Each structure stands twice: as C-alpha cells, then as structure tokens.
Image 1 (tube, helix red, strand yellow):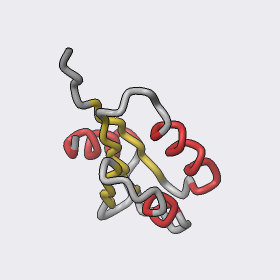
Image 2 (cartoon, helix red, strand yellow; image 1 turned 90 degrees about the vertical axis):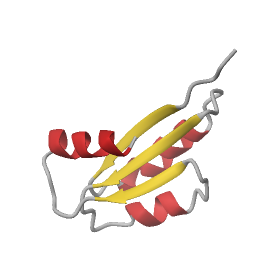
Image 3 (cartoon, helix red, strand yellow; image 1 turned 60 degrees about the vertical axis):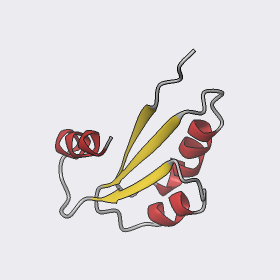
Image 4 (tube, one colour; image 1 turned 180 degrees about the vertical axis):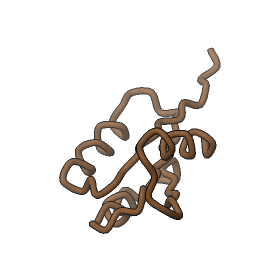
Length: 81
C-alpha cells in the first residue's frame, strides 16, 4: 500500500487562542504521511511561536507579505503544497 503525502493547509491570522489545539489535533492523527502548510496572514500575536514549539519537520511556515482576504491567502497557501 502506498501512503500518499497529504498537505494540510492552516491559514492563520492572529489565531493563537485555538492554534495549539488545532495543530495538536493534526499531529495526533493516525495517518502520519502529511505536511502542514502553515500560512501566516500577517499575524501580530504569538501564532508563529506556537507553531515553532511543535518542532516537527512536517510543519512548514510561510508568511504572507501583505494581509489578504481568506480566499487569496488560501490560494497562496495551496501553491506551497
């Protein structure tokens, strides 16, 4: 059986309140062949620090140059997958 790589897109703008729970849930899935495309949409909170605390090479951080609406940010994140 071939395990295909799954890309999980996490768009974030100041989401620190729920971010740890979100990322923990992803990390604890039974399917392990995944990457997390964490797309920071110009957060000013501790979102980046929370992500970095996971110390998991599957979690990849990208920061948007300028704040975008969700659909534009999501499309940019998809291109990183």
